[in-house]
Image (tube, rainbow, N blue to C red):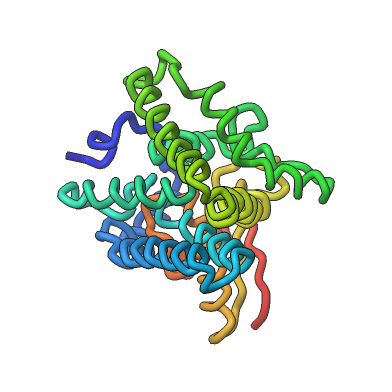
Amino acid sequence: MSFATAIGPEIERPRDAPNAPADRQALTLVKPYQGMVAWPTVLLGAGIVAAFGLVVALATTRTIPLWLGLILNTLILYADQTPLHEACHGNIAGKESKWLWLNHLVGYVCGALLLHEYKAFRYMHLAHHRDTNNPEIDPDHWVAVENPFLVFWRCLTIVFWYQRYFWRHIAFHAHIPGMRPLTLHIIAMYALFYGLALGLSVLGYWREVLMLWIFPHILASALIIYFFAYLTHKPHEVHERYRDTNIFWVRGKIVEPVVNWLYMFQNFHLIHHLFPRVPFYMYSKAFRSLKPVLEKERAHIYEFGH
């Protein structure tokens, strides 16, 4: 059973079929970097869940102040998007269908922490891949503005925009197979998430809910959309396969791995868009192999350092 068969209708198709010489060469070069079970992503997801739970426990007992819990959980949820994102592309299971349950488990759990329903987020994210920089139907195009104050505002409101996008473009749409029961499932999951938050608030934990979950969710989502969508797709106008996404290559024996992990390797975002089944921690290696092809195709590669 393939990942596409197991998870539902596949909509993650590149806009240009890989039949050009450059694509054929790139497919050969990238082959060693995809298909494996991504155990590092599983460990990252487990660490994120544990860290989030620890911060909640420490802040709830006032071992640490709520404001510090807010900052820590914002950073934790920023990292949480990566295992969720990897699950959306099937990169945790790789080619091994027997590990699909683990792929979905990571997606559901990490999605719940970030207050995203896993399958709803997957549909929206793959719409971004299918129609990158399309002002009409790319959900991430919400942040494609120039005014810095408007960029700031739109990053802060991306959560609400995603909800609007889902209900307008995806929910209950008959042309998407199985969407009616799936939408009902998504409604039930969101009712569970926000019902839990409301219930805890009624019990007197409203400060903790706001400071340790709701506000970190909004702030982390703002950081994610800024670093992973706004910067990586700027100027948000190009639609060519090798040029609609940027690479920020920070060179240096010490600084490069530090920057890569702080950016969760999305500074090599073009690699992800070209080959979404490459695990995030393999982007830099794949980039080095693909660099001659990318340069030939005039990809947007910005180098920093020596």
